[in-house]
Image (cartoon, rainbow, N blue to C red; front, side, top):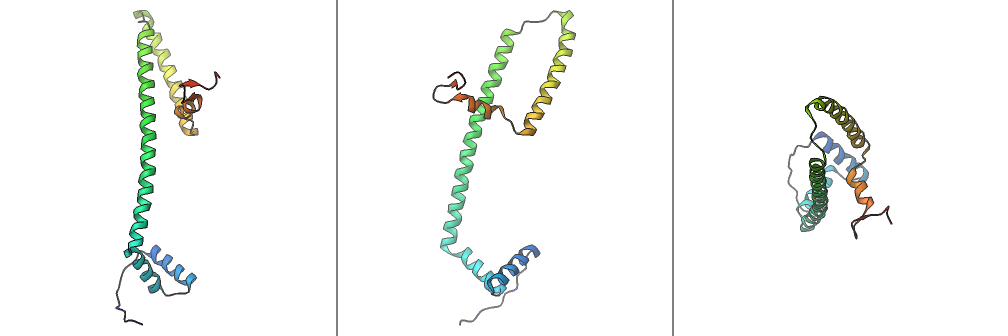
Length: 145
């Protein structure tokens, strides 16, 4: 058995409880648990495993960002087409009808906000519905088939 050097270290109480529990389960000393953990952390295998874990996580995040980019592009196109349609189709109102239109618009906006709140609370999303309804091969709705 080779000689060992004593070292005093400080641990977060919760982490120390985990070390103690593992030592009891494995029927080894706390020092043995900590020594094995440090050796694993410093080994080349550990750094390669950690790098592989990070690479997998980064790949997953990249795919999620790609999906978000597509969702944002769809939202941008949807909003711009709606605004274009609304601006080209909605006729200007005479002065006498504007007050009533503003009141009706406020009422409709309140209903829209309530509907949006319900959809967000339930997890329903327009883009999810859209992706189910549109056949990506043809850009056509699947209900028409």
